[in-house]
Length: 166
Image 1 (tube, rainbow, N blue to C red):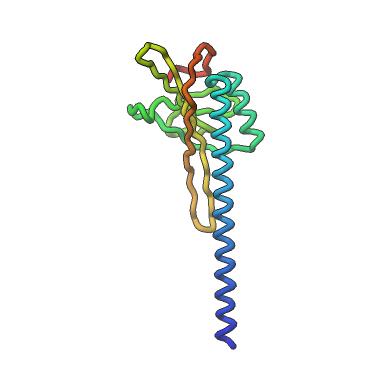
Image 2: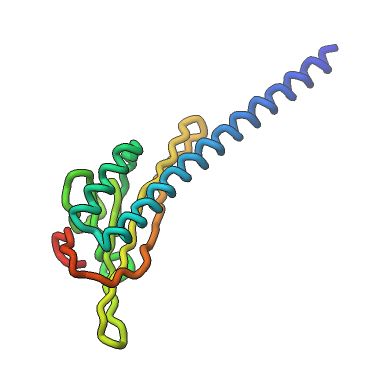
């Protein structure tokens, strides 16, 4: 009798553990999906308004705030490598500033300019959002970057918001 009751207790604990693990995985997946959706919307706005302008920044900031996106993280900072240099950090209601490794931002942007063989200048943007994992029960936490790239933008006649050209 005791053996049967202890076996059912172990089975009950296994079911509870499975439910906790599955719920945690589901919460992490939904949280990541939310940040991924915000990143895609930001890319759409950048492409629709042909770059990072006053209008596109206002629309993006408003959209992110209505979606309650408040994650913050640090951008890549310039270490002399062209892959990691030229990133700008953006906080809501502020102009972008050249990122450093000690400040956290709501999101990060990098404008990349290309000159074709025909001498035509084109540009595109890379954008970075932050996905934060915080599971104190498992002592698991961290900030992960969610990156995206726009298509190539051709019309550069609109004013940009950069403090300085990247």
